Image 1 (cartoon, rainbow, N blue to C red):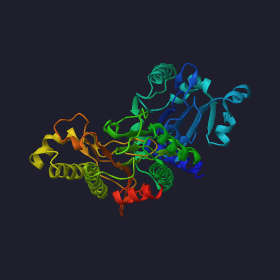
Image 2 (image 1 turned 180 degrees about the vertical axis):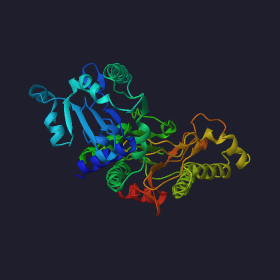
Image 3 (image 1 turned 90 degrees about the vertical axis):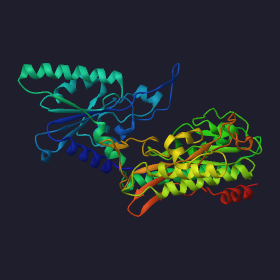
Image 4 (image 1 turned 30 degrees about the vertical axis):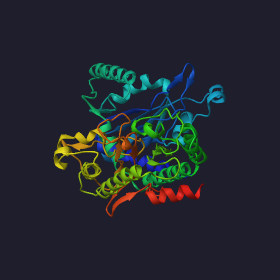
Length: 443
């Protein structure tokens, strides 16, 4: 199993400390345990930015980074975490503990999480800036506010200083996470390959009369067999359910003659993939399904080619929209002038979402889409999904009945590189001929 090492996590902390500047402190908490119902918790998944800087995956943990007068003096990395507790470890699993935080996770200092309120005060003194993830958790926000007030009072008594400025830490960490390095892309490629295998299995196993949740189980089998979990709630929408963008009930029968849209993928070592494929339940596209599918595929291929360094983030969307609208005009589904339809956005009757989003440790990953009010441009190492679609509502009386109830989306994960777009998810087929051949071979 491929993993990042503590060398990579330390390099990230080094970079963050340099960006923070002298006399600064950063406080970053992991995510709390989430309750599923009554006394049953969801399986814990640590906060992505916290893990990005620490590699520490246990709950109830806070990382603190302190810089000094000169960056040449280095910085101190402290980790507050749960202590070892034999009884609790018998029930809930082993803990790194204080010693493990230093020995395994290379913290300079480690403290029991119960001592956070007591120890943080001293660390806030003699600092000019506090970098903190404002707005992530209301309860923790309130604690930080109390610490700042206490530090201000203590600084007056001692004749020293306390942070006069609170800075949104996400401004720094999000930009770091937006640009993936080689090792991150290797992990994302593994996640993409596993997800591609799962989609291939779904195409090979689907049959008319099968339930959507049974097809979802085929995906989950591949994820689980490879030590992964879904990176988001899987969408398995047969027939008109594909026209519901976030359909996750997955509890209907897959019918002969319908398409099924699967938007599902896994995460590997905290890095996500995101794939959508649409294919016929019986293995053969109808003429109408094929016409709309090829239109979406043409738009997607052109949009992928627009993920070029220096291009605007929005360029793939503009390219996709123009192709989709022209195709809808050619098929007689829309009427009017191409440019006027695009300007008025009346095409949103059939294509109502964007063409992609950042991808990384989170499916909808961090990173701003605009800089100084302008769409940012693609830079090397940025990863974006490209996912145009068309959705003809089953009750849309403005179109010929033969088109109604057809929903199609095709999505791949694309890296912007100096050599052009790199498709991480190319291992799962997507042309009509490829899909039909794969499904025929599995009959």
